[in-house]
Length: 269
Ligand code: HXC
Image 1 (cartoon, rainbow, N blue to C red):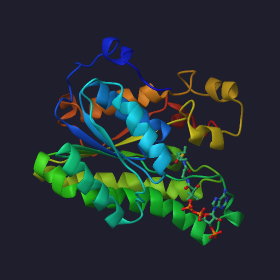
Image 2: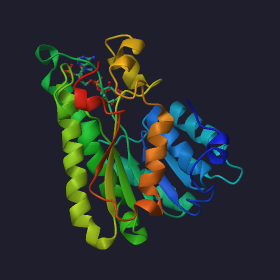
Image 3: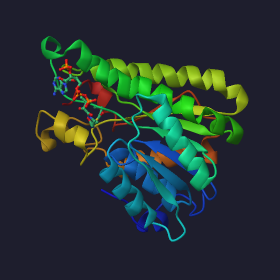
Image 4: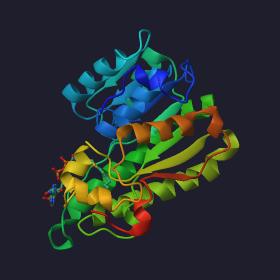
């Protein structure tokens, strides 16, 4: 569910927390990353929504821009994270129109259920290319801005590689790589003031991922989660705000799991 003005009035955050900051979001037209962006924009940031699909990406940028009177939210459509030059073009457009990049959310992802026997080498590669290589390319293309502004990176990962989930070999392998990428970047880029963290959502209500991947009923899944409910997109957005805020200025190289403790019990799907 999208956020609205009540996020500012009913939240723990200061309204102008991110005033003057610019966030660059791959996958920003999708549900989770879109609501992450909405929260940052409601708290003062401007944003670049980066996506493959022109219609969806343009629409998301227009809708998010309406959340705050002076918000600048631009669309960078036709961007394929598998091609670094494609992201460079989105970065150039962002600098031209918004002036800078402070925060990067690497959220573009691909997924489908496939058993090992029917998972082709190319299918495996497609997901690893989007999720892992795409995350690397996103940091590569934004690095100069991150270095200049002592910025922060947030990768969107998962918990399924902590224990092994059937029919998710490709995604588990890619997300394990994303976690490793973030940890190494935190260590290597820490001395120049860039932070790198990961958010690992559990089952998030109302997302394409959950609709596609949940193999049991919603109520059955909920009872198996220690906090007895699915995550909301707002749960992920709140953790995002924290990790980009000055309150997290000493936090880097971490994975923030937002799943109601579900993964400790193993697969709840
Ligand atoms: C088996 C499949 C398949 C399926 C595609 N393939 N779908 N194999 N079962 N359901 C195979 C194809 O046959 C092909 O292999 C290869 O994958 C590439 O497919 P293309 O369609 O050519 O690739 P592309 O157009 O680049 O699409 C990428 C995609 C697609 C990942 C396959 O699903 C996509 O674009 N998804 C983006 C949107 C999305 O998935 N969002 C949900 C994110 S949720 P062959 O061998 O035939 O060439 C999420 C949550 C993660 O990420 C955390 C979970 C808890």
